[in-house]
Image (cartoon, rainbow, N blue to C red; front, side, top):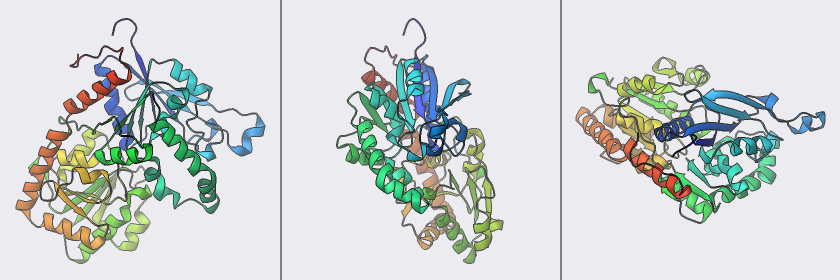
Length: 407
């Protein structure tokens, strides 16, 4: 790669917290190893940046969508872009001039995303692109739609939904695009939508230098979950009801949750269930802050309706923490009965039984802890992710001279 340093535009979501920013940090590191400069662009959510978009009621005012230039992911160039008619959703990533200008400033075009729609600007412009996708569009938002107001649900059913489904298919079937799925579950689900197999699975690698076991740090009966638990898809109420049931049974359980900035988000529900003294909420934590919490857990619990992977669960397994999960998609790939954890139905009694079975049986917990950390070292290493990423980078842009090893 001689001459000027290559620039890669990464279309993604706002880097607040959650799985997608974790994925984006991973891709950033893999690009930096290749001396490729990452640049980021994302739709600035109307709810957070109303001045950057132009809703229907403001169209006649002469206002135009704006942009906010900033730095992100290690002081790299980043752009938050508004849109026309943000209430329609399918306008968020249409390749208007602001997107085209950012795209033209970069030689490579990638997308790191919860669902495929972040790659829409590239697909609409017929450009080669490489997209790393966590989950299909519909599964990513199904639970949120239930909380919409009636007018918004009607708009979603009559207009947004049909258009977004069509745009998702356009991205997944783009002749010049390569799609990396976050898990085998995601690959199968996306293939069903696209009616073609995905190009590869890129499992999120775990940073072994940060996430590693320390058996002396484990607190018996301490359970936890990390993620944006305010998202209805995470089904956090199932976990809270499970804690209440365990408390009623006399178990010394304590629950630690990380991932929401508003630490009082669950307070009314905790008071209603009478478990506020058993639950501690942490803000979103950086990896070096999250790792000690994960090492202290007896069990990591996934109560979700749907997960493309649940990156925090892999990080917990790397810390020697067994995982109990509902049958919600991605976790079914790595939660292995009798080896790394247990799969259960989405029922408080079933979840409570599984937690108690592990927390009250120290030899079993030790066996599962060893299996969990071993599975991550064998399947979710940085070396494996690097090899997959470089292979697909070469397939998307054959002219690139990609070295076999990092510099």
